[in-house]
Image 1: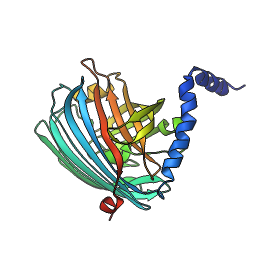
Image 2 (image 1 turned 180 degrees about the vertical axis):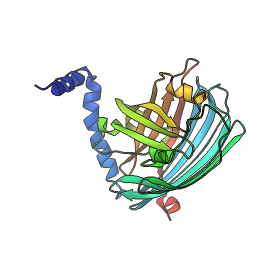
Image 3 (image 1 turned 45 degrees about the vertical axis):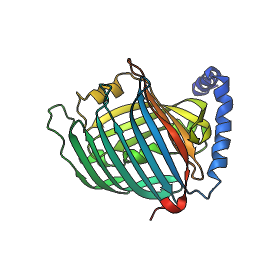
Length: 283
């Protein structure tokens, strides 16, 4: 037996039995859900953001996925009661193309305000590269890592990065690295499989979700002394539970959790359900 086969066998043996049995079940569930509506659908979700179980913010997302085009809009705000969270609010929108179940951004726009600093971004994509970019100049700082044109190549926007193709389901959902560019910062989100669990929203979806560990890897455009950067990279456990958007073969975040010494920071869906496709169909 090859070393790789031995390693895989050991890893499988050390995986909890429930997870090994649940992964095929999740794959079947995702396939069934994806086949309900000809790979298109409307979707809406509402989230609460809490730190140490104290509400500090909220967010909402609206998604429309058609045969050839998708639209995602998201807005939210936080109060900054926890030191690492900036007080502010923001909104983002992206439109893009659907090709073979993959989402490719075409135009992204955002406006965020945090701690009295406003960032406005508009950018277009062509063949996976940022083609045009207009962004508010950042505050000067010697510790800011310089961006180059290379950092705009083969990237996705922050909203498109949130939606993950179901593929074969199970562990394969988490085997990916997402190259993200938000108009000012370039970073990678690296996912790794953790477990399968059952979830239930107050309104909407109830069923299996795949939970991925998330590693934030800054590349360029960030300030080395940023408190948020330190929070995300200081050996912290971050995980994201992904659940299916009915009729699309796409998964969206149901819950994002980051460990914190004063209490976990959690963004969790209270509403996670299909919406009228007539009202939110891409134009």
